[in-house]
Length: 158
Image (cartoon, rainbow, N blue to C red):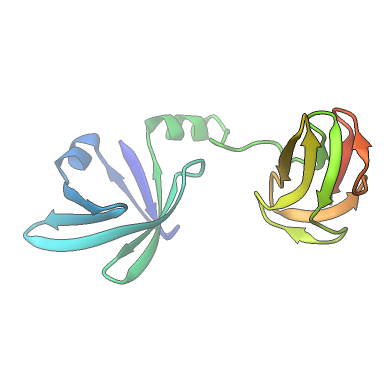
């Protein structure tokens, strides 16, 4: 049984049998043709967030946020846990010893998840260190051209 929530306001259940019986054909990447009760509909998946099981879907020029939880997701939620939820990361540490080649952020700057924070050269390779979450840079503990040891504190978040 799937629990479907649309735009965080409409919720309904969909059985696995109903989902398998859906007359749906993929016509291009992320675009589908759906036939239901002699009515034809085109749906396009605009964005996906697998960890949150959240999909942005365009149907008949309307955009919907669709959250799909299967039985395992429902059991995990009932136990008080969340799938894909991790602890809040407040410190960025060097994953290996190396040389700080570039710092792409400033203290007090707002950053988005996966935004490049700095570049660490290690073993003749440039490693981009990305932000693990949305947040604000509290402090930068290194300078460009500085050599750092493994686990050295590089950046702190507020």
